[in-house]
Image (cartoon, rainbow, N blue to C red; front, side, top):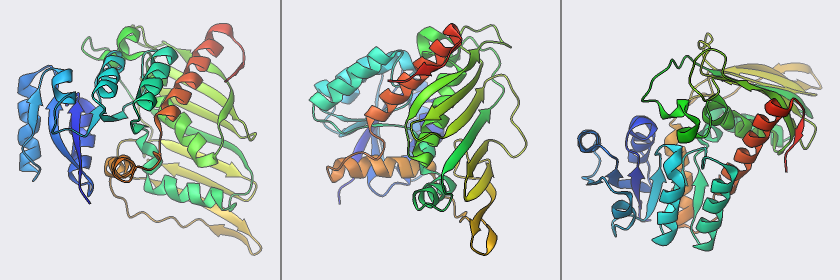
Length: 343
């Protein structure tokens, strides 16, 4: 089977550190082009690709030049959020499949336009919710689907870290990133809880504020969601707290089992799980495999195969739109001091 040729827009940050290395380990995808505003950065990343055994790539400082290239089949958009809509428009114009980082846009309206454009153009389009591909997460998903945890009553997902003020950090400015801790961190975990439990958010409330720093995006987000199946989940994400011992926290509580996982939420496929399932013989320790791989390779493989086989995306762009609606409802809940129904 041929490899999907991917052009990367936004070749710094997460693309450089995680997604491009993930692509290079992929069986069904390769990198053929990079785009960014700084030529020195592009040249440095291109050299790193070559030193890792990857191909020689073409470099662009103009997004349209990359997207229109005949050497590009699909585009991974990892630029600051304010640029996503225009770049998605280019993908639709030149009929290039697209893998989009979250949040999709600065607003729900922007996200809706991206979905409309991509689907009208007949593109395969996915949202980069890579935490779904964690080894422990996928095992828990299967156990929950199989009924081993019984009815899921409650859950928690926590990811916090220290992100001090930096005038170059676009995530700290609403006009550039659309929001702070909620949009950058908690959206992953809202999606993860929905994925694990197999149900959509129905209601949301909480506190999403700027408490510690002076930048205008929220630096702390604590939300409570009620899924359509009745599960209640607490999701806390923060730019103004120090990482807990052993990293993030994921908890699932059901009528037939309990699990607490530390360190599985993040940019690496990792984690330590402790839990049990209730059987006829009493409580049996939960035994999860820990043969970790690469979240980003799994994400890219999923996207590439959806294109190459012309099959539905595992994480469709519509899920990114949905989580953006949930996020907007969280901000409204804070502003109006009430529970919001998500529609």
